[in-house]
Image (cartoon, rainbow, N blue to C red; front, top):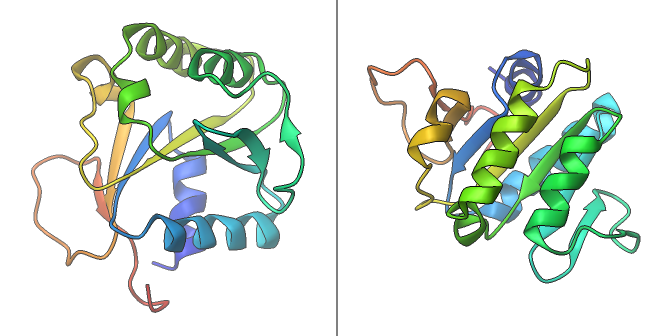
Length: 159
């Protein structure tokens, strides 16, 4: 399956949270950026030291999104589709208030698709978020897994 097809299937899925296990976050961001350009789907990137910006418009930061709680609130109240690429997110993910906000995001019925992509090899997904999380392994060979929510990023495109 091509990278764009996999990303489109994630967008079309019921998952709110995607954990991409990788050592190469920049490569994954490149894949998301290409998806953004080819499909027009809004992809955002967040770092805990700078805040949120739309991919391709790195020089324009979205106000009031630097803190993790402000970010979660922004995503929860967003009125438009968005894929949110979240780096260095483990400490934030350990915060129970953030976990509750992510659960709220997953339960919204307003017709706006919000997909949070957490990138990192050693991210530990909290128990209460596992049911809304899909795990993708990038740079690994496919492994038989009993869970249906573990996928391997396609290597066909040289990734």
